[in-house]
Amino acid sequence: MKTAAPPAHSKILILDFGSQYTQVIARRIRECQVYSEIVRFDIPADEVAALKPKGIVLSGGPASVYDERAPQLDPKIFSLGIPVLGICYGMQLMAHHLGGQVEFSERREYGAGMLHVKNGSQLFDGIGEQIDIWSSHGDKVTAMPAGFRSAAHTENSAFAAIEDPTRKLYGLQFHPEVAHTPRGKEILQNFVFHICGCAMDWTMGSFLDEACARVRKQVGDQKVVLGLSGGVDSSVTAALLRKAIGDQLTCIFVNNGLLRSREEEMVQRVFGENFHIRLKYVDAAERFLKALEGVTDPETKRKIIGKEFVKVFEQATEELLAEDKANGSGGHGGYHFLAQGTLYPDVIESVAIGGNPAQVIKSHHNVGGLPEKMNFELVEPVRQLFKDEVRQAGLQLGLPKEIVHRQPFPGPGLAVRILGEVTPERLRILRDADTIVTSEMEAADWYYRVWQSFAVLLPVRSVGVMGDQRTYEYTIALRIVESQDGMTADWVRLPYELLARISSRVINEVKGVNRVCYDISSKPPSTIEWE
Ligand code: XMP
Image 1: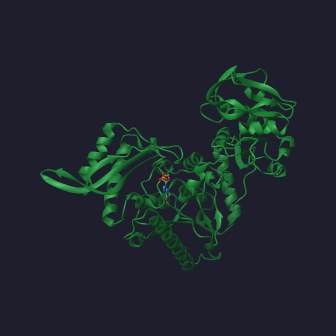
Image 2 (image 1 turned 135 degrees about the horizontal axis):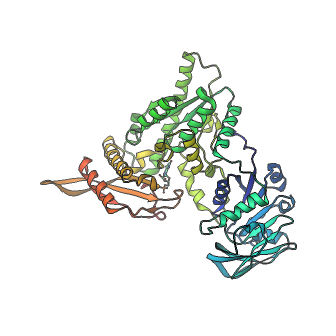
Image 3 (image 1 turned 120 degrees about the horizontal axis):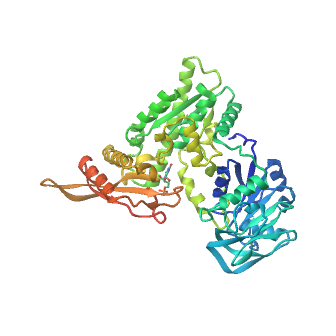
């Protein structure tokens, strides 16, 4: 499958040595309205030169430069004449390759510290004499390569920042990209603007114009099909493609019977009525529920749902072709292009040195993957964007807040929130409870402040009393978590009054429920979803 080429911008290239903060560096630089791209640490120098970056950042990483399996870089990168900023491991690597000395440190520097800045370094322009920094390293540079000088020190290290301004090579022992280095962004700005000479040309407006032009170039006058889920990524992709290629876009929205209440109405209203996108709505609820009959194992549920989705999607594309033929618009030999809302974190090739296990765990979430045999060429107009950038793009394209800022919802839908068998009755109970949770969270202004807030239907029944009657009914668990990216999460300390309101409404209004529990587990070791 082919994809489109990247744009021509002022660009900073980030070589990834496996740091958990590599993506944070990329985002910080993009926040300066400068395009940044992450590449593998072993990219050859001639490839770097061909990409024409204005600057290069070497990320941190868990290795020691003396490890046998330590990730090395092509040292010719230092003689390309392009400014380089090495962060932590990146700095040690730079010192090591250019003839300095790196040693295992007696005292590991981890956590907050104070950086004392020397006069005259461009990197610290306007920053003052001392700033709070955050570090995490064992090894440290004990002798600088020839031509370098120290630009700042800490109590524990004479070479907390080093530089060779003539060759435009810079190294920082600490992490300027993390929030615990409050003035770190200014250091990165100094590098990006004053040292590399980048222009502020990465704006959402310019991105959208270029993305549209790229899509038009890629697809010409051919037709494109997009599986619309109603989630942020596919919704923004749909709005962008509508702007780029108008009627050449058709969206397929599959109701798998596992959606939240009124979801299908909302999607049809926003995309069909407001955006005038040709939307093929497929009500396949019965088919999915039939396939799920008697199934209780979570992974089997996921597999069945994924398989059914592919079949339904294939069939829908064939129907579209037949419809096109019937109304005389089928001239281009069918649907050659498939659009997807792939985001940047999904395309960055992960570097598992000493592990960034998050990347590995995530893979099972990319469900609904349509098989290669369908022979589509992919159109992925937002594959350069991070999630917050996609949201910005969505707002700029005129999507409503209810879509742009909505919480993530898993592909297999409510099926993984009904523990045990999925039946129409259990779906009704969960859907009703979920509607109450969402509306109370919105009413109390909490919905947009948390990562996810939802109900889970447990396969447990317990005794209760209602009036004079003894009841024996289901339990709803509330899962309300905060998180940056879904990889780790913590339960939200919601006000008791809000919890009380949700609980009392669920028990009083949802037939079949007589107990509500609040899930107070963090991830890890628990997960966000219960299945
Ligand atoms: P877990 O439960 O693994 O969830 O802590 C992390 C994030 O991923 C979402 N999730 C899924 N999304 N298909 C999806 O598209 C899935 O099978 C799936 N399982 C979990 C979950 O809602 C949370 O945001």
